[in-house]
Image (tube, rainbow, N blue to C red):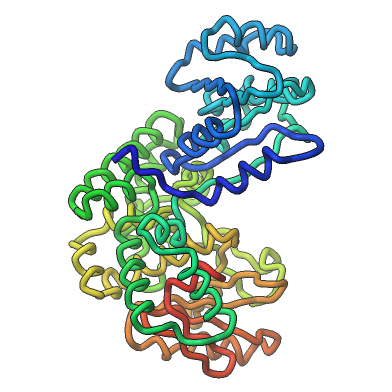
Length: 436
């Protein structure tokens, strides 16, 4: 199973960075644990460098000593050379600093390695937002940061043998506002259902591709969920108890009709100021993401944002399926997407919008009108509804929004059927979220 190589979009980012003709900063690849950072960087290094020096600060904590004390280049290179981690070949070596959050001084040191210019540097890490206070001096101007996520749906299609030409044809149908061939639509929609169950964690996807056994998939997912809980215990400090309660409450919170996160559902006497740090910890760890309420559908959304009213989505929908009550896997495979009040569908859409680079907001006025998502698209407000049933054309809140804000010329309703276009509203298959 480990030999199954998954094609990842980050590969093109790594190659573009490598081909930089002018100044080349250190590359920082950030993301949640187990999304494939190490595997992708390691594979890239083997293809493009004669020598790769990999220093993993969690696997070998003793190597932190390399970055203790003086950080001048000659001292650093001497310590690296005697550490037995690989050959330093000028202009042909990649220095890969893995799990760099465990050695903040190493992040500071990347500036001096970049200034020297003889060796390319890539760092990767999880929980980078957690210990930023421990970095004595950020390498501002000498570090370029990119985010890596678990597999998005397009990467999941690649893993399942769907040709890029087929995906390109889907994109053409999206651009030209045409229905998708019914055979292709049914096949891609079937894979989308499976994506909601499997999610995008590379180890889980490999397990699914290898065995097509959902029980084995769930076993892998349980291990990842437990590793998240372990990280909370290890790193969340004085708020680890609250962070665990919030994490475990997410599936039930999303099963509520309006999906809004309620502290009272976590603990009856909970206060926001106590739980705010726990929420931010889960956000900084890339485990969950906020979708903030806005009271007006105008850009910039932040001007009308209510920071204490939000939905809280899990960053991998496969893990949400595992953590949810009931046999949601069987229901989803049976095409019952309304299971758990459509929470799996809405979480999948939220996560894939984030993977497209969108910040999430939703429209709600005193609980009377609610539109699932508002995103910025070409400097325009684009309302997006995620529908799990056959009644996807019933959307009174969306109609009211379009009536109130006449500057909005387009809205999207995602559902499980084929594409239709009615006036300003585009009724698109759920998998079309990968093009928004």
